[in-house]
Length: 138
View 1: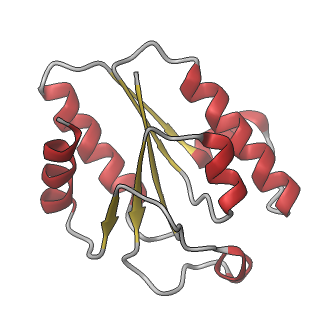
View 2 (view 1 turned 120 degrees about the vertical axis):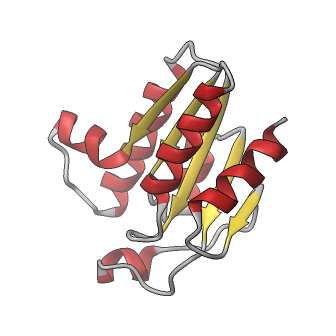
View 3 (view 1 turned 90 degrees about the vertical axis):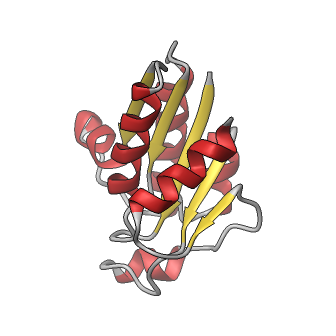
């Protein structure tokens, strides 16, 4: 299983890219699970965006991803803290650096740009970037 993290500020296009990437990988005959952070937060009724709440969410995302038996697991979440990304421990990290500020001021302040990533997406064009990602995943 290859665990893919799609991260970036709220509104950067994470979910749109995740859906497109899931479709392309599935069309190639792969099994793919996709987990969205808001759906996981809703499942656990945990809307705590403090540092502790964010880190707890990264452990949850890791747990659901690691429990998958699919070929690929795509998780899209903001992951604003380096600690969160370290906890999640992705095999492949995609950073959506498509906007300067998201819609939540606290998240904008907390966001630490990643020092390490596999792909840095710089424009909202899921067709283009999903194909680039598929090529790199081969």
